[in-house]
Amino acid sequence: MEEIINEVELTSLFNKISEGSRTIHFEDAMEIIYKMGYVPSKEDINEFNNMTKGCVCSLSNIKKFCNKIRSLNYSTEENRKNF
Image 1 (cartoon, one colour):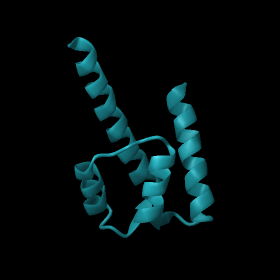
Image 2 (cartoon, helix red, strand yellow):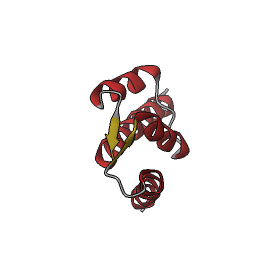
Image 3 (cartoon, helix red, strand yellow):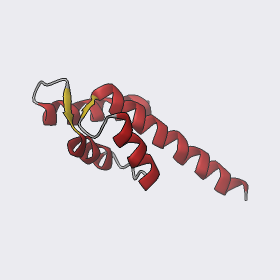
């Protein structure tokens, strides 16, 4: 259920910023990512920047990036619990 809520929120933020366009600027994408509560590492940001060529980002690119960060955070939290 939480995944659906996150996807709706992400899509809503994207639509608000994109004003109907299929892509947004990298800086706007990062703003969405931070508003969603994700805090990517410098390495993750650089990887996302390279993936999008630092120019434009689609909704699907942002979703993939958020899913990656979420899975990294969950695995990190699981490792902490096991110690």
